[in-house]
Amino acid sequence: MTSETESVPIVPPTPDVTELGVMTRRVMATIGISILALDQLTKQMVRMSIELYDAIEVLPGFLNLVHVRNTGAAFGFLNSVSIANKQLLMTAIALVAMTAIVAYARQVEPRETLARTGLALILGGAMGNLIDRASAGYVVDFIDVYWRTYHFWAFNVADSAITVGAGFLILDMFVVSSTDVSTSA
Image 1 (cartoon, helix red, strand yellow):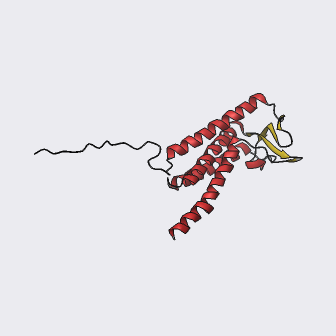
Image 2 (image 1 turned 90 degrees about the vertical axis):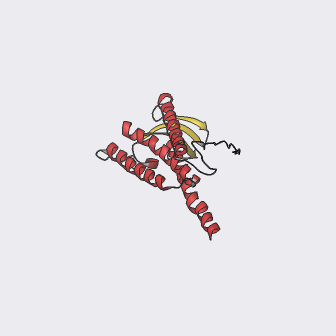
């Protein structure tokens, strides 16, 4: 008696995505590291090509590239305040915030791709600014958006990633999560 067995090839899942709509920690790390690298590269380019406090007009009446140092928090908050051990304090605050974000990111399910993308952007940006704060005591900002005489605070790639990441988290909370609730009811 002969037994016929069918040979079915076993295809292992790819290391990054096992199903459509799932984001692994590896993908999150890739996003974060990419943001970190782009942030550090652009800041180095600004340090090398634009003198401190100089500006290069890119789009007249709207956008300049500048070279400024932010010793404070986001958007220049506490920039002009003189506090003992300010570099240490700002670095410690950034480390605590990053630790909290990492702890939260570990709780987000792989299927929550928008939230995971937002967290990866935030972590990449936070790492970029943390490196600056810890090593130099300030963050290099270089994007100056303005209209007439009204200038927004100068910012950088890390700040942009953090802002977009926060927007993704807000969208996830109010749009995606509310959609999930309404479809499960």
